[in-house]
Length: 368
Image 1 (cartoon, one colour):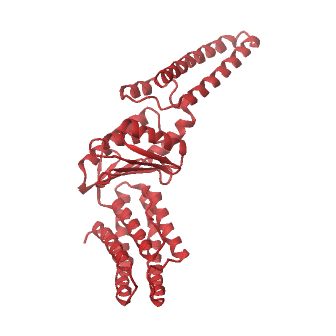
Image 2 (cartoon, rainbow, N blue to C red):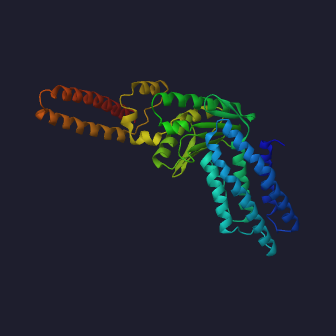
Image 3 (cartoon, rainbow, N blue to C red):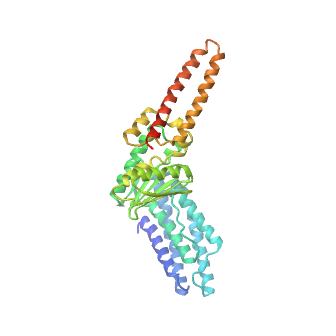
């Protein structure tokens, strides 16, 4: 069995076991978990360690941090054994896991989310739900570490199992991120962490340097999940995904959830996601990224994309520029002769920029 198949086998075994323990725990189920536990702590961990090392050599730099999860997997299998025995001795069913066991699972999810951007705990209310969540974490890891081949600069696809439309979507995102980076829209650290991975009908995009700043597209379910803790950015991404990709989205404090993804619009959705990178910086410093960047504004116009700056922020820039002009004019009254030409030249440059800002505000107002 290949390493990748071993990773998925671990997911299958834990998922099916979770279903089996929905009734009363008995001797047969304890024996079954002993076999699964042996598999997880032996074959699975060896396959996991090998795939982490191979993925690191394939260019997935952050994956080396996943080695931390190996000890957590070994520990949680022991905790589940104890939970099952405790439940068995009480002749119980649907026993609740202890808080310490839940903490082990949460640490596993934290490591998974840090690397993949995806959460994996669906609940911990009972032992079957708890084991199902562990199975989900194992599945997310398997998808992330599946044997991949590189396409373009930042896309990796499972060579044996991938959706062609998602491959095209990743390539479109890859190409547009290169263009936007060339145009100065990205912080260097964010750009260096960009990555796309296609496995079967799922596309995972790492869209920034912050832990968990990612997007998960599931073409089979028709869903898109964008993860970010910046509420302003989330609201903006919701608007872009609805306007430019035709999705139906809900924005919340930890991201954006969208429905309506299909083969006809998934490429558009992927392109929109290229604007998520470093968006928090552009929100807070619009003048740094947009004002005077003629090449960028021309490019956005040709793509049919409105300049992504709220009108209120442009007005703030205009106010600041006016205050700056007033300060320069005041300085002109008292400036020595040799400095006066320089100050006058500076004032003229600022007035030109101000004129452009006023023009953009009028365009925004007329489009309402």
